[in-house]
Image (cartoon, rainbow, N blue to C red; front, side, top):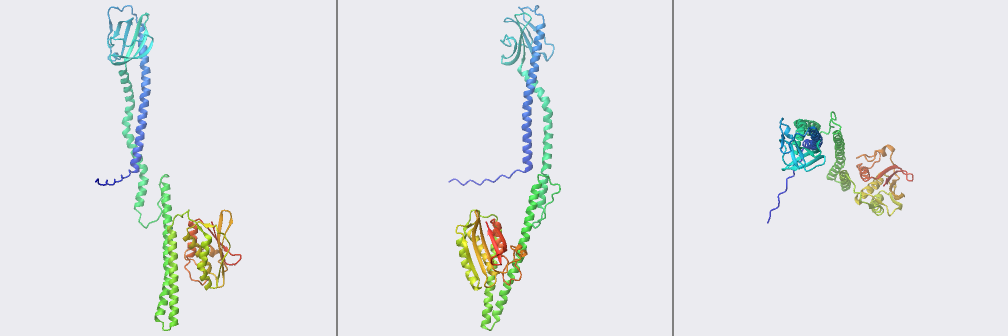
Length: 454
Protein backbone atom coordinates (compact mmCIF):
# COMPACT_ATOMS: atom_id res chain seq x y z
CA UNK A 1 0.00 0.00 0.00
CA UNK A 2 1.28 3.44 -0.83
CA UNK A 3 1.74 5.82 2.03
CA UNK A 4 -0.26 9.01 2.10
CA UNK A 5 1.51 11.96 0.59
CA UNK A 6 2.83 14.42 3.12
CA UNK A 7 0.95 17.72 3.10
CA UNK A 8 2.74 20.47 1.30
CA UNK A 9 4.06 23.26 3.43
CA UNK A 10 2.53 26.51 2.15
CA UNK A 11 5.09 28.87 0.71
CA UNK A 12 5.67 32.01 2.68
CA UNK A 13 4.32 35.03 0.78
CA UNK A 14 6.93 37.36 -0.63
CA UNK A 15 7.30 40.77 0.93
CA UNK A 16 5.67 43.77 -0.71
CA UNK A 17 9.11 45.31 -1.24
CA UNK A 18 10.38 42.21 -3.06
CA UNK A 19 7.28 42.02 -5.25
CA UNK A 20 7.48 45.71 -6.18
CA UNK A 21 11.21 45.47 -6.90
CA UNK A 22 10.80 42.33 -9.02
CA UNK A 23 7.85 43.77 -10.95
CA UNK A 24 9.49 47.13 -11.65
CA UNK A 25 12.79 45.54 -12.70
CA UNK A 26 10.97 43.08 -14.95
CA UNK A 27 9.09 45.95 -16.61
CA UNK A 28 12.34 47.91 -17.03
CA UNK A 29 14.08 44.91 -18.62
CA UNK A 30 11.14 44.26 -20.96
CA UNK A 31 11.01 47.94 -21.95
CA UNK A 32 14.80 47.92 -22.41
CA UNK A 33 14.59 44.81 -24.59
CA UNK A 34 11.82 46.30 -26.75
CA UNK A 35 13.81 49.53 -27.09
CA UNK A 36 16.91 47.54 -28.09
CA UNK A 37 14.94 45.60 -30.72
CA UNK A 38 13.47 48.81 -32.15
CA UNK A 39 16.91 50.42 -32.11
CA UNK A 40 18.36 47.41 -33.96
CA UNK A 41 15.63 47.63 -36.59
CA UNK A 42 16.00 51.36 -37.09
CA UNK A 43 19.81 51.20 -37.15
CA UNK A 44 19.75 48.32 -39.62
CA UNK A 45 17.50 50.27 -41.98
CA UNK A 46 19.55 53.48 -41.71
CA UNK A 47 22.88 51.68 -42.18
CA UNK A 48 21.50 49.67 -45.13
CA UNK A 49 20.34 52.83 -46.85
CA UNK A 50 23.69 54.51 -46.21
CA UNK A 51 25.73 51.54 -47.47
CA UNK A 52 23.44 51.09 -50.50
CA UNK A 53 24.11 54.70 -51.35
CA UNK A 54 27.83 54.02 -50.94
CA UNK A 55 27.59 51.07 -53.38
CA UNK A 56 25.74 53.22 -55.91
CA UNK A 57 28.29 56.01 -55.53
CA UNK A 58 31.20 53.58 -56.03
CA UNK A 59 29.52 52.23 -59.18
CA UNK A 60 29.08 55.79 -60.44
CA UNK A 61 32.79 56.50 -59.93
CA UNK A 62 33.74 53.29 -61.78
CA UNK A 63 31.40 54.25 -64.61
CA UNK A 64 33.36 57.48 -65.10
CA UNK A 65 36.66 55.63 -65.51
CA UNK A 66 37.84 55.02 -69.13
CA UNK A 67 37.85 51.32 -69.95
CA UNK A 68 39.61 51.48 -73.33
CA UNK A 69 42.97 50.52 -71.87
CA UNK A 70 41.66 47.33 -70.25
CA UNK A 71 42.91 44.23 -72.08
CA UNK A 72 40.17 41.72 -72.55
CA UNK A 73 42.70 38.93 -72.70
CA UNK A 74 44.19 39.73 -69.30
CA UNK A 75 42.43 40.10 -65.93
CA UNK A 76 43.11 43.40 -64.24
CA UNK A 77 43.10 43.54 -60.41
CA UNK A 78 42.79 46.80 -58.51
CA UNK A 79 45.40 47.07 -55.75
CA UNK A 80 44.37 47.34 -52.12
CA UNK A 81 45.42 50.70 -50.71
CA UNK A 82 43.58 50.67 -47.35
CA UNK A 83 42.70 48.05 -44.76
CA UNK A 84 39.00 48.93 -45.07
CA UNK A 85 39.00 48.71 -48.87
CA UNK A 86 38.14 44.95 -49.02
CA UNK A 87 34.72 45.72 -47.53
CA UNK A 88 33.50 46.94 -50.95
CA UNK A 89 34.42 44.92 -54.05
CA UNK A 90 33.68 45.41 -57.74
CA UNK A 91 33.69 43.49 -60.97
CA UNK A 92 33.75 44.73 -64.57
CA UNK A 93 32.23 42.37 -67.09
CA UNK A 94 32.25 42.55 -70.84
CA UNK A 95 29.55 40.21 -71.96
CA UNK A 96 30.56 37.08 -69.97
CA UNK A 97 34.25 37.92 -69.60
CA UNK A 98 35.66 39.44 -66.40
CA UNK A 99 37.77 42.44 -67.35
CA UNK A 100 38.70 43.77 -63.94
CA UNK A 101 37.97 43.24 -60.29
CA UNK A 102 39.12 44.37 -56.90
CA UNK A 103 41.60 42.12 -55.18
CA UNK A 104 39.03 40.90 -52.63
CA UNK A 105 36.33 40.17 -55.18
CA UNK A 106 35.65 36.55 -56.13
CA UNK A 107 36.16 35.30 -59.67
CA UNK A 108 32.60 34.08 -59.90
CA UNK A 109 29.95 36.61 -60.86
CA UNK A 110 28.56 38.39 -57.83
CA UNK A 111 25.14 38.24 -59.48
CA UNK A 112 23.55 37.09 -62.73
CA UNK A 113 21.40 40.18 -62.73
CA UNK A 114 21.85 42.37 -65.82
CA UNK A 115 19.28 45.04 -65.14
CA UNK A 116 20.35 48.14 -63.26
CA UNK A 117 19.64 48.16 -59.52
CA UNK A 118 20.21 46.44 -56.18
CA UNK A 119 20.03 42.71 -55.58
CA UNK A 120 20.89 40.06 -52.98
CA UNK A 121 22.95 37.04 -53.98
CA UNK A 122 24.83 33.99 -52.70
CA UNK A 123 28.40 33.34 -53.93
CA UNK A 124 30.55 30.53 -52.53
CA UNK A 125 28.25 30.22 -49.51
CA UNK A 126 28.43 33.93 -48.64
CA UNK A 127 25.61 36.46 -48.78
CA UNK A 128 26.23 39.61 -50.79
CA UNK A 129 24.47 42.91 -51.37
CA UNK A 130 25.22 44.08 -54.92
CA UNK A 131 24.51 47.00 -57.20
CA UNK A 132 24.51 46.55 -60.97
CA UNK A 133 24.80 49.27 -63.62
CA UNK A 134 26.02 49.62 -67.19
CA UNK A 135 29.37 51.14 -68.00
CA UNK A 136 30.00 53.92 -70.50
CA UNK A 137 30.37 51.24 -73.14
CA UNK A 138 27.18 49.50 -73.80
CA UNK A 139 28.43 45.96 -73.37
CA UNK A 140 30.21 46.62 -70.07
CA UNK A 141 28.47 45.69 -66.84
CA UNK A 142 29.66 47.13 -63.53
CA UNK A 143 28.88 45.11 -60.37
CA UNK A 144 29.68 46.55 -56.93
CA UNK A 145 29.13 44.33 -53.88
CA UNK A 146 29.50 44.10 -50.12
CA UNK A 147 29.26 41.13 -47.78
CA UNK A 148 26.11 40.97 -45.66
CA UNK A 149 28.23 39.91 -42.67
CA UNK A 150 30.22 43.15 -42.93
CA UNK A 151 27.00 45.11 -42.87
CA UNK A 152 25.87 43.24 -39.74
CA UNK A 153 29.18 44.06 -38.09
CA UNK A 154 28.68 47.75 -38.85
CA UNK A 155 25.11 47.66 -37.49
CA UNK A 156 26.25 45.80 -34.37
CA UNK A 157 29.09 48.26 -33.79
CA UNK A 158 26.72 51.21 -34.16
CA UNK A 159 24.15 49.63 -31.85
CA UNK A 160 26.79 48.65 -29.27
CA UNK A 161 28.06 52.20 -29.08
CA UNK A 162 24.50 53.33 -28.44
CA UNK A 163 23.44 50.63 -25.97
CA UNK A 164 26.69 50.30 -24.02
CA UNK A 165 25.95 53.39 -21.87
CA UNK A 166 22.49 51.96 -21.19
CA UNK A 167 24.03 48.66 -20.11
CA UNK A 168 26.40 50.48 -17.76
CA UNK A 169 23.45 52.49 -16.41
CA UNK A 170 21.36 49.37 -15.70
CA UNK A 171 23.02 48.56 -12.33
CA UNK A 172 22.64 52.18 -11.29
CA UNK A 173 19.01 52.08 -12.37
CA UNK A 174 18.48 48.86 -10.37
CA UNK A 175 20.03 50.45 -7.29
CA UNK A 176 17.87 53.55 -7.72
CA UNK A 177 14.71 51.47 -8.09
CA UNK A 178 15.60 49.44 -4.98
CA UNK A 179 16.19 52.64 -3.02
CA UNK A 180 12.91 54.18 -4.24
CA UNK A 181 10.85 51.03 -3.52
CA UNK A 182 12.44 50.64 -0.09
CA UNK A 183 11.63 54.24 0.74
CA UNK A 184 8.08 53.85 -0.55
CA UNK A 185 7.27 50.88 1.68
CA UNK A 186 9.02 52.34 4.73
CA UNK A 187 5.75 53.98 5.99
CA UNK A 188 4.15 50.52 6.02
CA UNK A 189 7.09 49.19 8.04
CA UNK A 190 6.79 52.07 10.49
CA UNK A 191 3.05 51.44 10.77
CA UNK A 192 3.63 47.74 11.42
CA UNK A 193 6.24 48.54 14.07
CA UNK A 194 3.92 51.06 15.71
CA UNK A 195 1.08 48.51 15.87
CA UNK A 196 3.43 45.76 17.12
CA UNK A 197 4.77 48.03 19.88
CA UNK A 198 1.31 48.87 21.26
CA UNK A 199 0.17 47.44 24.54
CA UNK A 200 -2.67 44.89 24.24
CA UNK A 201 -5.07 47.12 26.16
CA UNK A 202 -4.17 50.27 24.20
CA UNK A 203 -6.93 51.52 21.89
CA UNK A 204 -5.50 54.99 21.27
CA UNK A 205 -5.63 56.08 17.62
CA UNK A 206 -2.53 55.83 15.46
CA UNK A 207 -0.84 59.06 14.45
CA UNK A 208 -1.53 60.20 10.88
CA UNK A 209 1.42 62.63 10.80
CA UNK A 210 3.62 61.98 7.79
CA UNK A 211 1.44 59.13 6.52
CA UNK A 212 1.31 59.01 2.69
CA UNK A 213 -2.12 59.41 1.07
CA UNK A 214 -2.02 55.78 -0.14
CA UNK A 215 -1.55 54.48 3.43
CA UNK A 216 -3.91 57.00 5.07
CA UNK A 217 -7.10 54.95 4.37
CA UNK A 218 -5.52 51.97 6.18
CA UNK A 219 -4.57 54.10 9.19
CA UNK A 220 -8.02 55.70 9.21
CA UNK A 221 -9.70 52.28 9.07
CA UNK A 222 -7.52 51.05 11.95
CA UNK A 223 -8.36 54.13 14.00
CA UNK A 224 -12.08 53.60 13.31
CA UNK A 225 -11.67 49.98 14.41
CA UNK A 226 -9.91 51.06 17.61
CA UNK A 227 -12.67 53.58 18.29
CA UNK A 228 -15.40 50.97 17.81
CA UNK A 229 -13.51 48.53 20.00
CA UNK A 230 -13.11 51.21 22.68
CA UNK A 231 -16.84 51.97 22.58
CA UNK A 232 -17.66 48.27 22.68
CA UNK A 233 -15.27 47.69 25.58
CA UNK A 234 -16.69 50.65 27.48
CA UNK A 235 -20.21 49.38 26.84
CA UNK A 236 -19.28 45.89 28.00
CA UNK A 237 -17.58 47.23 31.11
CA UNK A 238 -20.60 49.36 31.93
CA UNK A 239 -22.89 46.43 31.17
CA UNK A 240 -20.87 44.14 33.43
CA UNK A 241 -20.91 46.67 36.24
CA UNK A 242 -24.64 47.28 35.91
CA UNK A 243 -25.37 43.58 35.64
CA UNK A 244 -23.35 42.90 38.77
CA UNK A 245 -25.25 45.65 40.56
CA UNK A 246 -28.62 44.39 39.37
CA UNK A 247 -27.81 40.81 40.33
CA UNK A 248 -26.58 41.88 43.75
CA UNK A 249 -30.00 43.30 44.64
CA UNK A 250 -32.07 40.09 44.16
CA UNK A 251 -29.29 37.95 45.64
CA UNK A 252 -29.16 40.18 48.72
CA UNK A 253 -32.95 39.98 48.98
CA UNK A 254 -32.89 36.20 48.65
CA UNK A 255 -30.23 35.98 51.37
CA UNK A 256 -32.17 38.25 53.68
CA UNK A 257 -35.45 36.35 53.20
CA UNK A 258 -33.63 33.05 53.69
CA UNK A 259 -32.20 34.32 56.96
CA UNK A 260 -35.68 35.48 58.03
CA UNK A 261 -37.10 32.04 57.20
CA UNK A 262 -34.24 30.37 59.00
CA UNK A 263 -34.83 32.30 62.22
CA UNK A 264 -38.62 32.48 62.05
CA UNK A 265 -40.61 30.67 64.76
CA UNK A 266 -44.01 31.56 63.38
CA UNK A 267 -45.07 29.24 60.50
CA UNK A 268 -46.85 32.10 58.75
CA UNK A 269 -43.78 34.29 58.93
CA UNK A 270 -41.63 31.44 57.60
CA UNK A 271 -44.05 30.83 54.72
CA UNK A 272 -44.04 34.52 53.80
CA UNK A 273 -40.23 34.63 53.84
CA UNK A 274 -39.98 31.52 51.68
CA UNK A 275 -42.47 32.98 49.18
CA UNK A 276 -40.37 36.15 49.01
CA UNK A 277 -37.28 33.97 48.50
CA UNK A 278 -38.94 32.20 45.56
CA UNK A 279 -39.94 35.56 44.04
CA UNK A 280 -36.37 36.79 44.38
CA UNK A 281 -35.13 33.64 42.65
CA UNK A 282 -37.65 34.19 39.85
CA UNK A 283 -36.49 37.77 39.47
CA UNK A 284 -32.82 36.74 39.36
CA UNK A 285 -33.65 33.98 36.86
CA UNK A 286 -35.46 36.42 34.57
CA UNK A 287 -32.56 38.88 34.84
CA UNK A 288 -30.06 36.18 33.88
CA UNK A 289 -32.27 35.09 30.95
CA UNK A 290 -32.43 38.67 29.68
CA UNK A 291 -28.68 39.06 30.03
CA UNK A 292 -28.15 35.89 28.02
CA UNK A 293 -30.59 37.12 25.36
CA UNK A 294 -28.70 40.41 25.07
CA UNK A 295 -25.37 38.59 24.88
CA UNK A 296 -26.65 36.40 22.04
CA UNK A 297 -28.04 39.43 20.21
CA UNK A 298 -24.76 41.33 20.61
CA UNK A 299 -22.87 38.36 19.19
CA UNK A 300 -25.17 38.21 16.14
CA UNK A 301 -23.66 40.49 13.48
CA UNK A 302 -25.86 39.74 10.46
CA UNK A 303 -29.52 38.68 10.46
CA UNK A 304 -30.84 35.70 8.56
CA UNK A 305 -32.59 37.55 5.75
CA UNK A 306 -34.61 34.48 4.74
CA UNK A 307 -36.28 33.85 8.12
CA UNK A 308 -39.87 35.02 8.58
CA UNK A 309 -42.58 34.11 11.07
CA UNK A 310 -46.39 34.20 10.62
CA UNK A 311 -47.33 36.68 13.30
CA UNK A 312 -51.01 36.07 13.96
CA UNK A 313 -50.86 32.54 15.43
CA UNK A 314 -47.67 33.24 17.32
CA UNK A 315 -49.11 36.46 18.79
CA UNK A 316 -52.18 34.57 19.97
CA UNK A 317 -49.98 31.99 21.70
CA UNK A 318 -47.83 34.62 23.46
CA UNK A 319 -50.95 36.51 24.59
CA UNK A 320 -52.43 33.25 25.94
CA UNK A 321 -49.20 32.56 27.88
CA UNK A 322 -49.40 35.98 29.55
CA UNK A 323 -53.14 35.81 30.20
CA UNK A 324 -52.62 34.28 33.66
CA UNK A 325 -50.24 37.10 34.61
CA UNK A 326 -52.83 39.67 33.52
CA UNK A 327 -55.63 37.96 35.46
CA UNK A 328 -53.59 37.93 38.67
CA UNK A 329 -53.46 41.70 38.46
CA UNK A 330 -57.05 41.97 37.26
CA UNK A 331 -55.81 43.34 33.91
CA UNK A 332 -57.33 42.78 30.48
CA UNK A 333 -55.12 41.57 27.64
CA UNK A 334 -57.09 42.19 24.45
CA UNK A 335 -56.12 40.99 20.98
CA UNK A 336 -57.91 43.40 18.67
CA UNK A 337 -59.07 42.98 15.12
CA UNK A 338 -57.84 43.14 12.46
CA UNK A 339 -55.36 40.42 13.29
CA UNK A 340 -54.05 40.04 9.74
CA UNK A 341 -53.56 36.27 9.17
CA UNK A 342 -51.04 36.60 6.32
CA UNK A 343 -48.66 39.05 7.93
CA UNK A 344 -45.12 37.68 8.35
CA UNK A 345 -42.52 39.41 10.47
CA UNK A 346 -38.91 39.18 9.16
CA UNK A 347 -37.63 37.39 12.27
CA UNK A 348 -36.90 33.80 13.24
CA UNK A 349 -39.72 32.51 15.46
CA UNK A 350 -37.67 32.51 18.71
CA UNK A 351 -36.74 36.17 18.25
CA UNK A 352 -40.31 37.07 17.25
CA UNK A 353 -41.54 35.51 20.50
CA UNK A 354 -38.90 37.37 22.53
CA UNK A 355 -39.84 40.68 20.88
CA UNK A 356 -43.59 40.30 21.40
CA UNK A 357 -43.29 38.86 24.91
CA UNK A 358 -41.11 41.76 26.05
CA UNK A 359 -43.53 44.30 24.56
CA UNK A 360 -46.56 42.73 26.27
CA UNK A 361 -44.72 42.01 29.52
CA UNK A 362 -43.57 45.63 29.83
CA UNK A 363 -47.10 46.87 29.12
CA UNK A 364 -48.58 44.58 31.79
CA UNK A 365 -45.82 45.18 34.32
CA UNK A 366 -45.95 48.98 34.26
CA UNK A 367 -49.74 49.30 34.05
CA UNK A 368 -51.82 49.47 37.25
CA UNK A 369 -54.33 46.86 38.39
CA UNK A 370 -57.46 46.86 36.28
CA UNK A 371 -55.60 48.31 33.26
CA UNK A 372 -56.14 47.21 29.66
CA UNK A 373 -53.40 46.15 27.23
CA UNK A 374 -54.24 45.87 23.54
CA UNK A 375 -52.42 44.00 20.78
CA UNK A 376 -53.13 44.67 17.12
CA UNK A 377 -51.50 43.43 13.90
CA UNK A 378 -52.38 45.14 10.64
CA UNK A 379 -51.15 45.98 7.17
CA UNK A 380 -52.22 49.61 6.70
CA UNK A 381 -50.30 50.08 3.44
CA UNK A 382 -49.33 47.73 0.65
CA UNK A 383 -45.86 46.40 1.30
CA UNK A 384 -45.87 47.51 4.94
CA UNK A 385 -47.08 45.81 8.12
CA UNK A 386 -47.15 46.88 11.75
CA UNK A 387 -47.54 45.51 15.25
CA UNK A 388 -49.13 47.80 17.86
CA UNK A 389 -49.07 47.32 21.64
CA UNK A 390 -50.78 49.98 23.80
CA UNK A 391 -51.84 50.19 27.41
CA UNK A 392 -53.87 52.34 29.80
CA UNK A 393 -50.98 52.89 32.20
CA UNK A 394 -49.45 56.22 33.19
CA UNK A 395 -47.34 56.40 30.03
CA UNK A 396 -43.93 58.00 29.70
CA UNK A 397 -42.73 61.55 29.16
CA UNK A 398 -40.99 62.38 25.85
CA UNK A 399 -37.68 62.49 27.72
CA UNK A 400 -38.26 59.01 29.16
CA UNK A 401 -39.37 57.69 25.76
CA UNK A 402 -36.10 58.97 24.25
CA UNK A 403 -34.14 56.87 26.77
CA UNK A 404 -35.98 53.65 26.09
CA UNK A 405 -33.48 51.03 25.03
CA UNK A 406 -30.73 52.13 27.39
CA UNK A 407 -29.63 49.12 29.38
CA UNK A 408 -30.92 49.05 32.97
CA UNK A 409 -32.94 52.24 32.46
CA UNK A 410 -36.25 52.28 34.37
CA UNK A 411 -38.68 55.13 34.72
CA UNK A 412 -38.84 56.38 38.29
CA UNK A 413 -42.01 56.22 40.36
CA UNK A 414 -43.49 53.09 38.78
CA UNK A 415 -43.13 51.02 41.94
CA UNK A 416 -42.48 47.92 39.83
CA UNK A 417 -39.47 45.63 39.99
CA UNK A 418 -37.52 45.03 36.83
CA UNK A 419 -34.07 45.07 35.31
CA UNK A 420 -34.58 47.63 32.58
CA UNK A 421 -33.33 45.13 29.96
CA UNK A 422 -36.63 44.39 28.20
CA UNK A 423 -36.50 47.50 26.06
CA UNK A 424 -32.78 46.98 25.38
CA UNK A 425 -33.67 43.58 23.91
CA UNK A 426 -36.51 45.08 21.83
CA UNK A 427 -34.33 47.84 20.39
CA UNK A 428 -31.44 45.47 19.68
CA UNK A 429 -33.69 43.02 17.78
CA UNK A 430 -35.28 45.86 15.81
CA UNK A 431 -31.91 47.39 14.89
CA UNK A 432 -30.44 44.07 13.88
CA UNK A 433 -33.38 43.11 11.63
CA UNK A 434 -34.20 46.59 10.30
CA UNK A 435 -37.51 47.06 12.10
CA UNK A 436 -38.84 50.53 12.90
CA UNK A 437 -39.89 51.09 16.51
CA UNK A 438 -41.84 54.24 17.45
CA UNK A 439 -43.45 55.25 20.75
CA UNK A 440 -46.09 57.84 21.59
CA UNK A 441 -49.16 58.24 23.80
CA UNK A 442 -52.11 55.97 23.04
CA UNK A 443 -55.07 58.08 21.86
CA UNK A 444 -57.60 55.47 23.02
CA UNK A 445 -56.13 54.21 26.30
CA UNK A 446 -53.94 57.14 27.37
CA UNK A 447 -50.85 55.11 28.18
CA UNK A 448 -47.84 54.16 26.10
CA UNK A 449 -48.30 53.03 22.48
CA UNK A 450 -45.54 51.12 20.69
CA UNK A 451 -45.56 50.66 16.91
CA UNK A 452 -43.22 48.15 15.26
CA UNK A 453 -43.19 48.52 11.47
CA UNK A 454 -41.46 46.58 8.69
